[in-house]
Image (cartoon, rainbow, N blue to C red; front, side, top):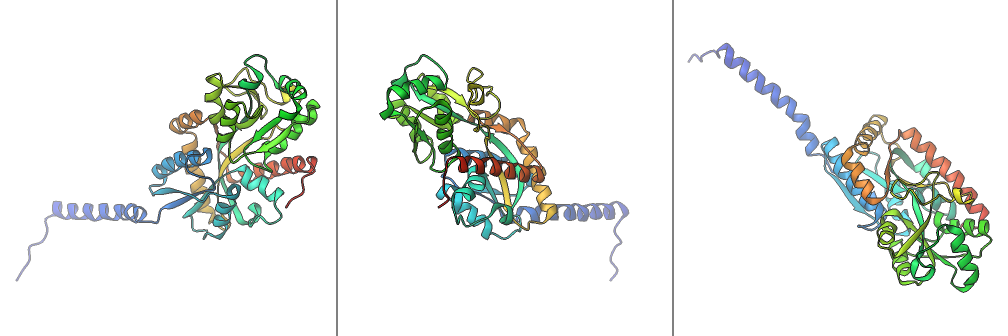
Length: 331
């Protein structure tokens, strides 16, 4: 039996279909790949978690893979950091961390269970997270501004000179000592579990002042229940142009701002590291991500892996001096 020979147009059509199938194969393989896990060392609903979820949404679009946030809360981010150290460097596990976990914890704990410079590969910066100091209007009233008003009140009420901070042995915790020494006032640092309960006690007049994130402090300040007196960093915030920095009020040593960034396990292939960095930078520079970060009171910011590594080293050096000046002994 003789079979008919395909006509030339049909042959071309068949060839085109085969090419289309070949082009689709990598996409299908990528869709079937394991999801990328973004480890977060804090509970769902917190600031770092919110940043991670917005980042995951953007990365999913850029990389064409499922990107899932996995919360591993506890010990200031240590549990998630240790999980990253144990993960394979195959690109399926990343860590979204604030600088407290990767820069401060190794300075204040004798055995944190990880060494960021040895165990992690910096991938890219995501955001800058300034914090604020606010005072309770229930105790200090609605008039007056600046830290010196707080210092005067504290000297008149020494048994109530408590300043809430989000965690013990954190940058805000040590900042209380910096502010007190500069103003000649014996402030007492009062550690909390996060900044949400600080705001609750400020509004209720249980504490005189507290340090926390813009996202948590600003709504209550706008409602007149808190008065913001200082912002850390080297410049004022666009949302709060009338609030001076600590440095503007004559207080040096609290210019370093907490940042949020992405890390991978050490040994991640360089090509994959660069691919992830490009994707993160594209998401961070997008208008959608910028709008989401503005609502949280943080500043989107991107970097190369090398720039992030240098920033981490500089932050650790600055905070190391802060810890030493406080006379704190690692435990």
